[in-house]
Amino acid sequence: MNSVLVTSQLLKYSDISIVPTIIVTEPEFSKGAHIFHASGLPCIPSPAPEADLCAAIRQHGARHAIVGIQPYRSSLYETLQPGAVLARFGVGHDGIDKAQATQARVLCTNTPGVLNDSVAEHTISLLLAAARHTTKVAASMTQGAWAPVGGRELRGKTLVLIGCGPIGSAVARIATAAFDMRVIGVIQHTPPREPGYFTQLTNDPAQALPQADFVSLHIPATPANAHYINQQRLALLPPGAWLINTARGAVVDEAALYDALAHGALGGAALDVFETEPYVPVHPAKDLRPLPNTVLTPHIGSNTADANTRMAQHSLRNVLLGEQGAYGQMNLLNPEVLPSLPRNGSEH
Image (tube, rainbow, N blue to C red; front, side, top):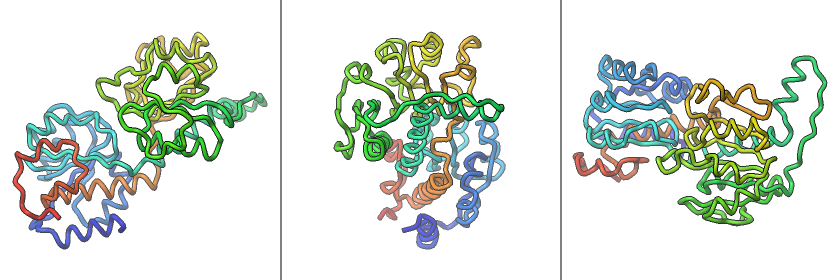
């Protein structure tokens, strides 16, 4: 069933006596404006910084908030009321402090599954750009130059996927079915749903990385994954290998990556995510942007009209389920909060 219709039904058949006001951070509001307007709910855009978001919640008496990737570390959890929903417009939730939210009795949600295809397709686009030097030759053409550069076919090349969850598995499916690549999956926690698209599966990155023509990252930004790709793991890669990251910037040591790229120890890097966004070099002398062997995009992996529509729909659905007390149907990130909340018997 279409999620807009689901949203309407939740409003019609719920026990909500007062329609709640929802503050939506401006970047996310603009991406899903057609859904937020069509929902019939009072959805009000706000600047994304935490102080501005808190001010908007207080000004409009808002009960819930829908937010993007920006980190929220302090006053937001004091500003939201107990039982409020803090809905992440997206999947990664490292910007939300679940411990503080739980202590404040705030429900945290995300929208898993809705952006898998968009991120997987962008990963493949970066893979192709790396193989054929697309951005480099396109830039030279716009400057009036005719400077052909030889590329590589993908057929038969080895793609190492770090992380075999839904997005990694989608990349494996495309790479295998469309390009007949050899795909090695490094399992971190979640085994692939369709292992047939993988040539090999392993738990040991040191076994997989030396075989790679391309490495693509699909792991979350957890403390255990901080700088997962570091100097030691970069040294395991063949000199011509390319690193692709559409996961989170925190999983790559950008200083070590710069050194590997600048000294020719790596073929190149295609990055959609960075340690600091908007991008700021980790050191003034280690700016990735001028390097000739980089392809850099401004965190657009999930930014398609299709995925944005689904993220807006599912964010609103999580808010309304929270209003109903239908916690078991929410994409809840902090279920440990539930014992502190009343249950109204409307879960179904």
